[in-house]
Length: 182
Image 1: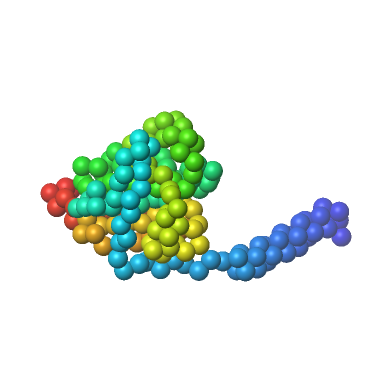
Image 2: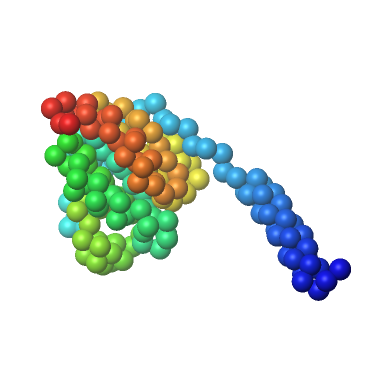
């Protein structure tokens, strides 16, 4: 057997072994999917200016609550999508609301750097209870909750959204929020 063939077989065996090991670890560490809660839970959290907001502030809108942190790479990757969709669908009733599990100074810097066009609220001691009430008892980030204009929870998502996935979830609710929109 040639040296190149032996090397190729060795690489294949190592690759298969690594794949099996990765699969086993992934199954062992798998967090069960989150359940969509039946009802919304109100909250009172402050924004970067210190003003207190509650879910009721956005009653009648399609709300995308996003729990995130500046130190969370998947959170940072999905924020440009939220900025874009907030700009595109605001007139059709969309309101993205970020709830940051982070220090206010880091959030303020990131908000400014990214030119975030939606409200950012700062977590407090009730935030992990809030995440649990919204179906995320592990406190994993990013975590998003899509609430229809009717106030019902449409879906929850642990992990980052991808464009097509989020737009597919949003569009039926935007139409309901503004029937005259195309």
